[in-house]
Image (cartoon, rainbow, N blue to C red; front, side):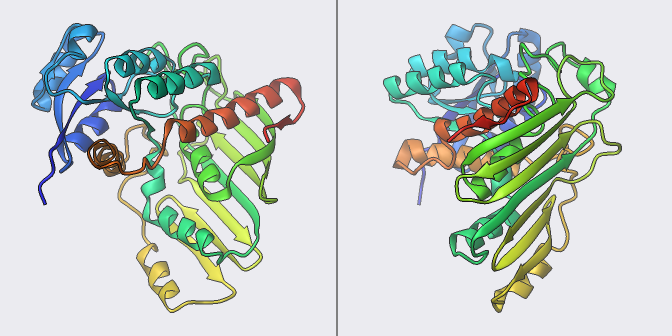
Length: 349
């Protein structure tokens, strides 16, 4: 069945834009039309690599023939303005995590997209990991029984050169926070995706080794709306960097995911397919998932987001992650920061 490919453009050609370009150019539902960056030379070099057109003016970029959707790959605190401008130009939007660094900006982005009747999708590609898919399916089927705990550890490492590689890294104004807002937002989304919305959070942040104004380590304890509890540890100060670990425990089963593997998959009522699942996810991918190197991850999760948005534009498919879904992670992260500053828990629901 033929599909009328959706023309995509990329806003921002920094490090993560390569994943966007690979996702679009390898998608059977999209093609890369144009790219834009505030540094024209960088945009032209990037465009040449991916056989696209570089446009020096942002206003002209939004007018490129065939441009129907854009991906936003600018630094976190610079998401709002290009999203709003693209929406007002009638373009659908796929925005890199986090949607932005404040709830006020995110709410405005969502409002404008609704008014302009364009789609706003958020990127959290970890949801597409096979182990995550299996865990979510088991939760939906009630195999864990009543959830008791949904917790995570993301003990990564970034050296000083990482933070010095761009002036915005490790700043409140543009990065919006440190290990939790930047690296940890993916894991926060998985906790929300698997455990559900969070009712209350107690948080603490600290800076152990980096010369930055934000945290390199964050801790949180949370109560979920469904009655489960959990903890979260996120850091970029832990040598040499370790895979993300997520633990799900319930009254009828438990699972532990480490990177892309399932280190535990146990249920009171065993099914024939459980052994197959254990064997399938006994070994992980060849990438670190970002544990010790920022860009050491597979672009295919981004491609599934691109595919989903393209089909939503053409066929009305439901977005996997809407702007409202993406907002939840930033709400939680901001609550951790507020709790850390005040020394008091924050009630969210």
